Amino acid sequence: MNKADKIVIVGGGSSGWMAATQLNHYFPHKEIVCIESKDIPRVGVGESTVEQFYCWIRSVDINPEDLFKYADATYKLSIKFNNFYTQDDGGFHYPFGVANTDSRIFGELGLDAWQYLKLKYPELPNSDYAKTYYPSISLCETGKINFNERKEFDNNFDFFRSCAFHFDAVKFANFLRDQICVPRGVTYIPATVEEVNMNDRGIESVTLDSGEIIEGDLFLDCTGFKSLLLSKFDPEWLDYGHIIPNNRAWACRVPYTDIRKQMDIYTNCTALGNGWVWNTPTKDRIGTGYVYSDNYTSPELALQEFRDHLETNGFDTHELAFNDINMRVGMYREIWKKNCVAIGLAAGFIEPLESTGLFTTVAFIQRLTETLHQTDSYHKWQVNEYNTVARADYDGLAKFTASHYMYTQRTDTQYWRDCMDREYNISIVPTDISMPATQTSEDYWMIQNVKKNYYTNSYDGLGGTDSIMAGMNANPLNRLQAWRRGYYGHGPSFKQLEYKLPDLKELAERRRKHWENEAAISEYHYDYLKRTFWS
Ligand SMILES: Cc1cc2nc3c(=O)[nH]c(=O)nc-3n(C[C@H](O)[C@H](O)[C@H](O)COP(=O)(O)OP(=O)(O)OC[C@H]3O[C@@H](n4cnc5c(N)ncnc54)[C@H](O)[C@@H]3O)c2cc1C
Image (cartoon, rainbow, N blue to C red):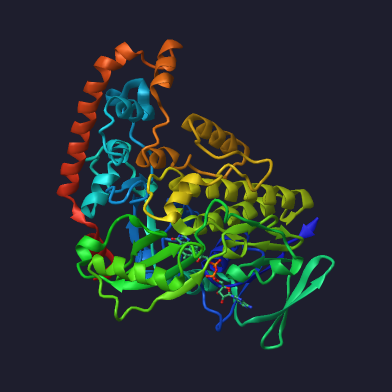
C-alpha cells in the first residue's frame, strides 16, 4: 500500500490547477501543494472544451457562470468541420448532447433513419444529418442562444447537457488558482523546480530555485510537453505520427470585426492545404491557429498559408503576434510510474481537432480520484489498471480523430492524398480495438459499448462517430445491408421503406423548419452574454 496524504503537483497550467481543484474537493483532509513556475509560460492554448467539461465544473462545486466573468468564456454547442471532405464542401456539425429521435417521426428507425434517407435520397447534403436530429444546429447557424425554457424546440433539448465552453486558457488557470484553489486551502508555491530527487519509492522530493526542498507522497507531473517528473523514469513513448501527421501549430488572437456575427456558439474548424485552422471565440477576441504537419510544408509556408486564410476572411494580419508551437502527438505507455502520475500534456496529446486535451485531463483526474477513494492510498494493480485504461482512451481518441482525415476525398495536396492512403488500422496498443468504422459503424458502436461498460467513466457518451461519418459522406448503410436487415426482420423491407421514407423526410423537414423559426426569433449569443455577464 502506498500512501497519498501529501500530493505535490508540479505545473500550474490548466491541468495543474484542474488537478488541484479536483483533489482538494474530494480529499479535503489531504495536503495539496501546487508549484507553478513564474518563468516558464503555460502553453496558452486549449480554449475549447467538450460537454463533459460542464459536468466536471459542476462536480467540483464551481458556478459555471463564473467562467464568463473570470475567463472570458462563451458557450459552445458543436464543432463544425469545413472542407475536410472536399474543398468548399460547406461543412458539417458534430453537435453535443442527445440526438432527438422522436418516434412519431422516425418510428423504430431512430438514429438509423437518416442513413436510410441518405440511401434513398443521395442528394441530401452531408450536413443534413446533424440538422435533422439536433435543434442546437439552428442556433449555431444563426449565432443565437436559447435555453429551451418554454420547450419551444422540443422536450429533450437540454441546453446545459449539450453545451461546453470556449475560454481564455490563461485566465481560466488563473481563475482556478486565485478564486478556487487558494481560497479552498491548496498551497500555492510560485517557484521553478530545478531538481527532481529520486529514491526507490520513486520521487522523494523536488528542489526549487529558492533552494527549498518539497517532499511528498504522490507527485503529479503537470509540466506540459516537457514531462519534467515522469521523464526521470525513462518512460516508453508511443507515437501516433503514423495516423495523425500534424505536429506543429501557429497560434494567434484576432480582434473581432463584427462581434455579433463572429461570436459563434460552436468551434469552427476549417481544413487548409496541410492541416486545419481552429476558431474559438472568447469575450474580446477570437483565438485561432493553424495545425499542420511539417512533413508536408515548412513553418514559413504554413504561416503564409495561415495569413492568407485570415486575410481572405477579412482579418488584417499585420499587427498580429503568431506563436510557433511544436506538438508532441502520442502518449507515454505508462503515465503513472511509482509515485508519479502525469496529467495533461505531460502524459500525452492527440492533436486538438476534437478538443481532447482538457477532456483527457478531466477523465484522468476523475479516475485518479476514484482510485484514491477506495483506500485513501493506492496499490500496484490500481496503477496498472490506470495505465491500461489511459492507453485505451488515448488509442480510441487518436483513432476517432484520425477518422476525420480517413474519409476525405480531397486530392489537392500531397497531405490530403496521403490521408486517403494511410494504414489506419495499426494499433498502438496491441490488445486494443482495430480502426473504427472501416465499413460498418455498427462494429464501432458495439466496441464503444463494450468499452463503456468495461471501462466505467471512459466515455460518458458514445462519441460522435455517426456525426463524423455522415458529415464525411461515409454512410455505413448500403443497399445490401438494408435489404438483409429487412429480410431478417431487423429493419423495414424495401417495400415498407418505399412509403415510409417520403413521409419521414417531410416530417423531419417540417420539424427542422420549426427549429429554424425558433432560432430566428431567439437572442444573439453575444447580446445575451453581454447583457448577463459583461455589462
Ligand atoms: C496547438 C494546441 C491547441 C490546443 N487546443 C485545445 C483545445 O481546443 N481544447 C483542449 O481541450 N485542449 C487543447 N489543447 C491542449 C491544451 O492546451 C492542454 O491540454 C492544456 O492547456 C493543459 O496544458 P498543461 O497544463 O498540461 O500544460 P501547460 O499549459 O504547458 O502548463 C505547464 C505548467 O508547468 C509549469 N512548469 C513547467 N516546468 C516547470 C518547472 N520546472 N517548475 C515549475 N513549474 C513548471 C509551467 O509554468 C506551466 O504552469 C491544445 C494544445 C495545443 C498544443
